[in-house]
Length: 211
Image (tube, one colour):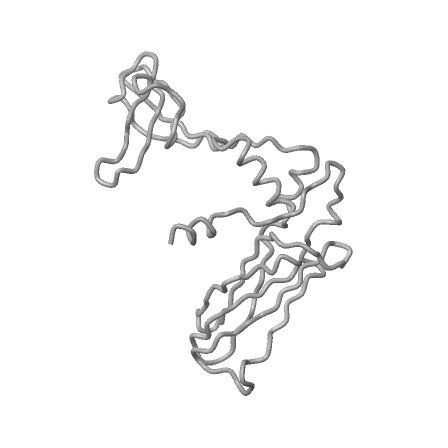
């Protein structure tokens, strides 16, 4: 069970990204395709069957990709019935993927596949996560009278206990800490706020997330 959890959160295998890469060589939706595979055993589809869809990812030139790691979302839906189901996407690590859907209703169904992030963007995300795991900035706001202070907060902070305010949930055990304010006390905390992202992207990399 532990190994399954590790596999579920492991980074996918993605190609390295050269410093002078071209966006046209990255995964793109324009020429990528998907094909609905025939039903196992032949015949028509029935409620309860598993529908399989083969997805082939290409770059912007229309050339098939030879590696995996793209982030894909697949869904099967019927807008008229307000019915839908998410597909389980299997990465074959060669530019192709299989999406598997459970058929849960009678009538028509439409397949939709979305390229959320190309594999090249995943390579960048893995690098910045390893280099700067605390890149999401969260703040605690402390206030007493006319005095207000803000300090950084997170589930894990590098500081001795006497320098931290411990706001760990006593019911769930979920950890949460803030650096102690200079003038105020821990009990003067009033709210938490989002402080922004600390992304260190190289030239051109930001365009991988703007398509």
